[in-house]
Image (cartoon, rainbow, N blue to C red; front, side, top):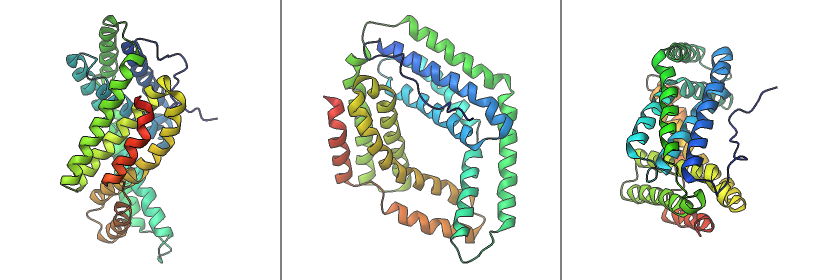
Length: 290
């Protein structure tokens, strides 16, 4: 039976714990989870475990952004460098997995009953090369030292632990996350292009992780009701980002690329990019800020 190693266990944390204690506990649990996932990824090349590996590191990245006014900047920069390197080690494996799945879905809905076998073979071969590179990187001492560096940084943060609780810090943490989203919206309204859509997607995801990892401790009922709505908002942005990546991977294969681009235009028209979408988000999040 498959164990869900991606699920965050907050049962041992409380809103009355020191904010820095919660920060250290969350980061440490995430790093331990990443290490637990590695044997399953390397043994079975499991797509889902690889996805969980990346999501867990994205949560670490989000926590580093969320706590940037609380944790010393020098420590944060070191942790960001190491967590980004662990994430980057996966290369394009996940993107190529999604691309193969997309091509198979596209062909199943087209008039052509048989997919382009040559194209699928080429992408599969590239995926295997990327995966082998990832495996080699995990055996490198520099890769494993990243985990040690992060834990060492956490030890430094624990020494600074104060009596300021998570509950005390929560209003500023959620407002800062909302401010980042609003800034992304404002820049997008001035220049509606793909890089600004990508930035909005990242900031919305960090807001979601703020609520998912911390909000559930402070205002569990309100946080739970907001999370399901926020995940739906993110879904179309995530799908659009996946398509952007796939366009780049397929730039040498015109026919397959055209099919995916047509789907991308339909998704783009439904993205939550307007001022009314921002107002709706602010209305939804307001119960968590008071």
